[in-house]
Length: 371
Image 1 (cartoon, rainbow, N blue to C red):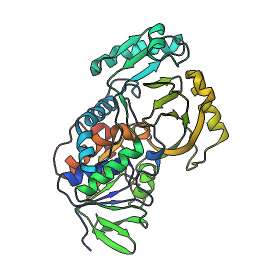
Image 2 (image 1 turned 90 degrees about the horizontal axis):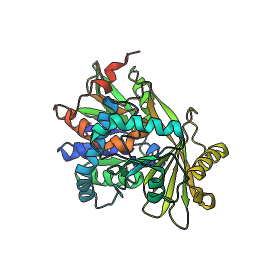
Image 3 (image 1 turned 60 degrees about the vertical axis):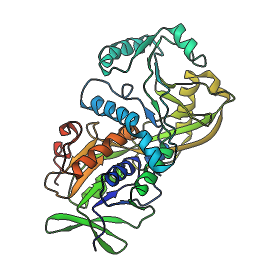
Image 4 (image 1 turned 135 degrees about the vertical axis):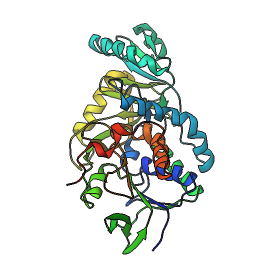
């Protein structure tokens, strides 16, 4: 049966963003997910918008990450207008703290090339860090990026889904199994609920599950799950006003007065349990960064499966030899940051237009995709 122009498989923040941009472009869109929209890695995410903190060297990754930050500045008001929801986008600034001399050297080196991003980076001496964030432990200085910030990931995915619906997309959470329908050597659409649904295009945005879905097409998309545990804490007064990176910990002040504490990074397969070891690691790092967190109430804890590619770059674009399929996966720790620019890219490709930035480094074609 005919269904719509485009099916989006996966209702995390990447899939919801793709659905909104596609529907905004006038396409008929169906968004499919086996569970609640925004219920997997999105729900456990910190929502940090910090391209420089996530980038080790210049190159395509930081280019995409910076484009992601710009997309928030340019499009978040349209998301709010279409959805009627506030995703709590805040340009509060990101402070990377040097916990020792070696970290200070590394931050100075990073500041050298990251100055080209034109985000008004500022080096702060230890006394300046203490003045800016008195709740932090003593340090060897810090690097402040005032244009970076954060967004509430669950509110963002809900806003994008509502915005897509407002533009005419059909949302299908808690759907039965969605499988590819191949005919005549081409992806024709999906099997779901015992029915064939025809689509001109399928967008695969199933996060860590993308590899398994593609395997049904005898395609290799080398994306694996990497577990991340997190905590939400509450103190009498918020310990920080900026997003803070300190050692292996990061702290995110949320609008409701809580603090997000993240996050572990574990090669644990599909395990999503919150563990005593994970909580111990998170609390130790958080208290070392901001001693006031010793008396914090733990409001909640959780874990998500980040989709990591084998080379650390997202997988975005068409797959050679598989007409009718576009992939948007492998964003690892940066799905929130990159969701809007990825949505822009998907909409451009679906309309037969050039992507807003070079896609060669992210193309599925960089892998031997056929088994």
